[in-house]
Amino acid sequence: MEWHGITGTDALRPLLLRGVGVLLAVTVIRFLYRGYIERSRVRSLKAQGIPILPHSLLFGHLPIFADFRAEHPPDVSIYMFHLWLAKNFRKYFPGLDKLPPVVYVDLWPIADSLASVVDPVAASQFTIVNSLPKNGVVAKFMHPLTGNVDLVSSEGELWKKWRSRFSPGFSPRNLTALLPELIEEAQVFVSELRKLAGENGEWGPVFQLEEKTTNLTFDIIVRASVDLRLHEQSRPTPSPLKKALMEQIEFMGMMGNAARGLPSVKMPWHYAAIKRNNQAIRDVLLPQIENKLQSDFRPDQKKKTIVDLAIKHIDKDDPSASRDRPDAEFVDRLVANLKAFIFAGHDTTSSTICYMAKELQDRPACLARLREEHDAVLGPDPDAAAAVLSASPHVLYALPYTLAVVKETLRLHPLAATVRTAAASPGFALAAPGSPRRYPMDGFGPWLAAPIVQRNPDYWPRPDDFLPERWLVPESDPLHAAGKEAWTPFSLGPRNCIGMELAMIELRLVAVLMARTFDIEEAWGEWDKKQ
Image 1 (cartoon, helix red, strand yellow):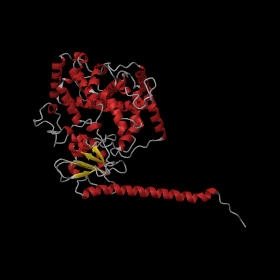
Image 2: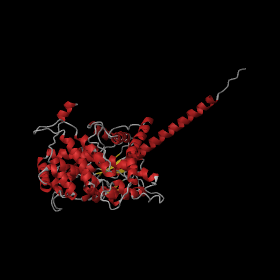
Image 3: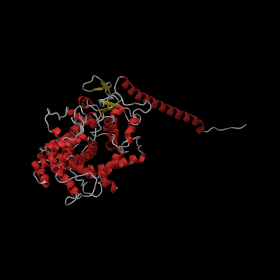
Image 4: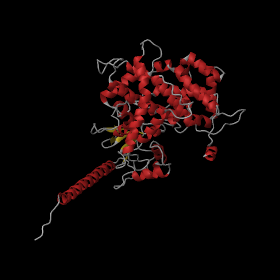
């Protein structure tokens, strides 16, 4: 007689395999069920007579994004999808003479499904009439940088409280008081460009303007926030703050993005790098906050940074807190919001400066009129403009054509747009002027299609033309825009960009200091040779 011992592992193996099989089966079933729900939702909309992009039961609208990706570089921005769709709408909506006011996009399982809203009146319904919460994709994107205690991705009372604390710092009155400091940074920008300019009417070497404008915007937003001079424009290598933030932005982009295909996956070492970068940024910002806490702040002092005005509320959350004994949570949220401001404030403004230079290069008549206005208001000497503005900051607001150039650049080249969620508002739907049709938002994130909204021919005469004059004519003029909701570079409603005024000041200031000092011309052929 023989005995065969059965080990514990042998006995457990069938149970483990069965458990894994059940878990796998449940996962597959849930995946298939979710897919059925997502695809059926689109089919239901089509059955209601709503125009829908060609839709695959298996892949949804991902094949359309494949078409989009095939015509663009791998790092294309998702916002370019709007203009591409507007250009190709007859292919995807045969029989229509224009895009529908709402375009549904089924991106599951790569990303959440969206409803691209191309009509400004419809867009106002989820940003102004009903200010819906930000879509979850915003929180996912911002989390590596801020932990979602920032104005961009927070909601409810937390957002309201901190928006009210920061708003005075971004007010026109406060930023005008800070204008001499901003001019100082802009003068460094001009000085750096002079080093690259040619002499005696000759062109200088080819270079990337965006590198210079990005360094400028870093210097300005940090100076306005905490009164710290980064000297990003003049240092030979990036500062620790810029280096850490730029690396952090790469990690923030590791998420579902149908424009670029499958999402990148964060590995354990990525999380370690995220933590390290956040600490590096904090090491720069925290000492500045501590200096502000320890300084003698006077409510009547003329120059108040964004942090100065926010610190006034240090005892509002915790009555026992004070400038000598600050609440740790208050400081953490202050740092998180500063990081969000630097992130949001540097990239969009720097790119807009480049677009403005491009538009003026292509339109010599606009550039000539801009220079004429600067001669008339600031005097004939371009080198004296900075001194004039420092002595009389209000003069920056007395340049209507300059403002028109800035606004027209932002109209043709918006660089961000809000995306919301209607998950907490079952049955929420949008409507467009002149149509009884309702566009349900259940299961779709309303997405402000700013590039199309701001070129919508129903609202903008000659929508694709760069015409600063449209901002100077009376409402009765045919060139005037048909609705105030149609200009959306800073979004709409109570959750519009808090830094709008700072961005507009930066853009006008750069226009003043650049337009009469430099001629700028694209040189892609030379750049390609240099590479």
